[in-house]
Length: 375
Image (cartoon, rainbow, N blue to C red; front, top):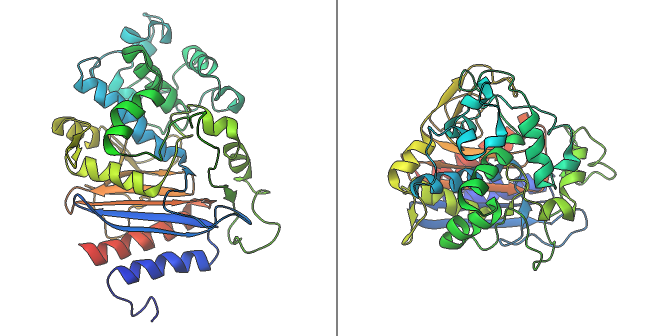
């Protein structure tokens, strides 16, 4: 039987296997929820070049798929009455800006929807600071917005996490990794997911390999010597795995990520565990800013508060999705989303960093296969 005549879940399994056979990445995981039930959990390939077989509980670097986890902590604090979306950042973090500047008008909503104006700062150019929380926060305190907060939107690749994470620390007294563990990961049983790998767990995270189109993982001597190789090398280090870089350094599995999105699709509750109020999930997923030319990415984007809504040609939620779908991707490697209309939640995690166009094609193929089977 081939992928062309397979039916049901077998069709998804064969599409998943075909991408591994084609050498798009060394290893991958795919997990799907239909409503509150996990209906698919696949793992295949290897943890890296000459690595062990990939299993469903193998941790992977999640890159920007970490951002929704960090955002969920801020939303949880809103539910708890410790933060409000309209609060100014300086009301909780006075050192963030001088009172007589436009930066002081930055709100929690602006931070969560990439409207803070600190998309690219000195922080992005100094990755050695990312493992030092105080140094990273200090760089953001010294940074000037590139646009007045709330007047536009531009993707904040690294600063999003430290901005939101410092708000969590100021409002709760806990680091964002600790807060996520207590209020998001543990309640949902996401045992294999962390923002900052604990010292008592071994650093067994899958090895990232970056590829230039059309390199494949079976080709010898390809991978790290590419434009994306610097990211692979940096995020393969134990120091980064253990650091709380809340926009990028989360580690986890597709099973855990699909469970998180199934919870959001179900209004913030799953299997008796409620992490967010239903109204808060609606606020989290509602479009807050829509731009035709994102100032960082140069493509159309529709931002919620911690997630990206579908409805543009550059989405990675499948060609059959609509504008109600919400989710997030991670640098050329992973994507997760939920469809509130169908109740589907999808998470695809790999250890191969690919060109965005090629990454979109492989992810959309699997997303469309899942929709064909389960819708």
